[in-house]
Length: 304
Image (cartoon, rainbow, N blue to C red; front, side, top):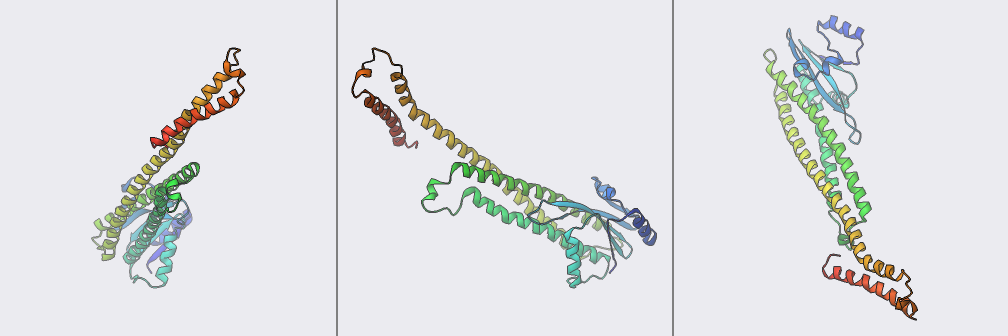
């Protein structure tokens, strides 16, 4: 195989590789440049290309690192300052002879294919989890007596807050994956525009098609996340308004009894009810009646 993989090279190792192959090995700072012109360079027949590669497990925060691809002569050199799982997966699949790796371009195409597959897997995981989040937001599948009663308001708000946190994590992950997609798109476009000596193979074109499809899927996921965030915030407002609504009703129901209790709590000597035998019972019944009437009115108006 015409592939040299360099992991966390020291300055001595970079110098040795430059003497053997006659190429300049870019540093980590060069690979991390924001400007596309700094990360994609053609010099003396050698292509220096850099892409942002995602790695990490699905349930872990997304991590990214720049990977440098140097295409020179019959060699492909990759320089990476970390160990993304996509490269390990490529080595495993290459060992199983899944591809016909005959030259540097076929190795580059196969390696990019695995990197793109890894991005697609991460987005598919986000899509699958968003379906679970959607069910948690709208409580689909609820049946029985709890269907209309609904869950405890406090518990419901807590669930919706957790939903917002999960959507936020997925949004940050999607943003990082989008950065990876854009860097790969620029790399493939650069490789295509500098393919006079080594025209791009069909596999490169297929990878570009996959990138466009994945970008569309990522766009759909972001639209779904925006909708879910708006729906979740709206539902949290509804739940909080329920609490305020209940408190308002309670205050309206309890205000007349409080007024009556305040009147009879003044203890004036000329209050005739103070000397009644049934004055205490009369005041209690009057307070209960004054609370029952507003409650009955709200019930008839279907405000409760």
